[in-house]
Length: 353
Image (cartoon, rainbow, N blue to C red; front, top):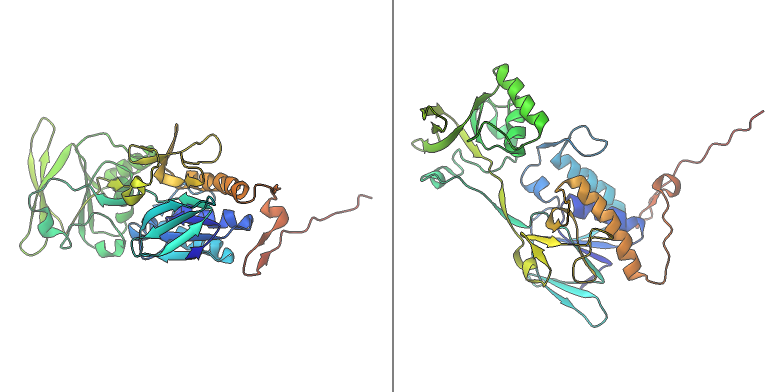
């Protein structure tokens, strides 16, 4: 039986930052994740994808963000159960919870924080008859290593942030980038849409809208795609391509967590955002993309905020008779469980003469 103060389900960015915030309160954390490494989607799906909305980082690769979060959490010595899925939960008479994984590993804690991101997920695939024939042979649903596309002809389909961001990024890697979308309007960030338009004007991106990929061809691997213009022209185009990447998002599933008696709304866990992001079961919190509440934004930085407030509530639950006085790290420094200490700078006092 693994015992800890806060048991975190999910080792993505929000879960990892929870370790740091809990550590400032001298609370120990243990994380469970079905993936074989920490980092969640940032490590598994797009480690080389740049992120632009992390405070203090004009641009940071997802994999580098995970590395930094691991370093930040390191002094607080978190435990990890990786490659195992949280399967069942049981509340004991003393109010603590026992979470058992699909491999039988048991964990016990007075507080459970679900930070499972989108949960388990599968890519949404376009309805192409021979799509599976080219999977791993030119067709991919996510980009882990952009270097795979070095000097290749790449066709990306989609109208969201991922399609826009990767089209922009790969212009410096691929020999040719074509972005196909069934509408003339895009769902992504306005600055990304404008950048794609600028790259199109410079001849660095081929932008084909409104259109859809309706066919794939190639003898042993992908050699090209067939496009159907969906406007008034209804023109058919054959386009040579080494790679086809449909980025239509993911179909998220909560998995076993959905059977834990939590209040669910549209495949997300409802929480009380007026105080501490607690679920309908006292002692179980949900933070990050896995939760929902009025005005919810699925952003990493929002998950960081939710984790911070959740840890304050968790401290009061674990130590109801203690009053925690918050100290800014710039004043108190950071003391890790490993004995390390980052001292806050001493105040400089000057005498006025």
